[in-house]
Length: 318
Ligand code: HSE
Image 1 (cartoon, rainbow, N blue to C red):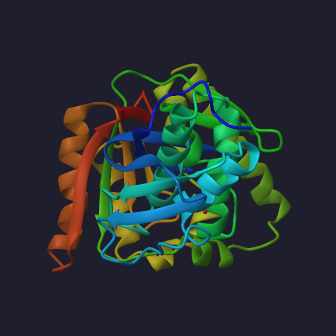
Image 2: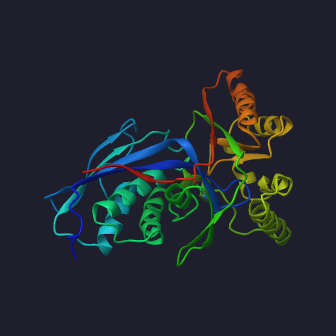
């Protein structure tokens, strides 16, 4: 098979950062945010296969070898199902800290498959693109979880209804929902943060967790902020990770005291989020959350964001 229908030679796509889990929705729920994200330029070249020619913004931490790089693996998965005679070259621009809990590996994988699909004349559906992108997650963290790649590609708040085959539901959300996000200057590898999770969960915790997830879905579907409020609490999974993040209890308590709807670890951390009912509230709360780190002379980045409804987008094609 070769792409005869597309005359394009080069496509650049952007894919946004994401907040996965939202506390209780471990591996199930995630959302896209505005601001940070990765840009990938995919170019047709004569050399067969996938070549990563350049990565910017990673402080030389990421491998150029396509089989070891999340974007490279996603591109290889795409081309396995859509073989071409020649090859493609990738240029990756990272615009978020690595291992920060904001879906850095998924943003690169998603931008890659989005750009590739456009370059080849859109042969694949979004579900298929997610299949390819999750292979990038598998190489990055050892688990092909979808709760970062789905919102990064599709935008909004997404619920992973089914993994094999992939079915994603986009959840409605209140217009003024805003997020405060802080990123301490430590790195947490998702693979490591998954290894510390218990393999078995007591029955009473399963029931509590199921109720939280169900209530979170109801809260979004009914746009009921009161119902959403209690659901960001994760009763069993996140609790095993909090020890990896300095000042976790203090910062979360502060966000809740200041009126956040809920707060917790973004993905596998170390970023922390607080869900807020307005932009103003988010701006006030993010300063308070960051202050705890600053008064302890610890570096922290912070920003606020609405939910990014658009998801990945093509920014240039020639
Ligand atoms: N659901 C994944 C985890 C998200 O928590 O391990 C990682 O960003």
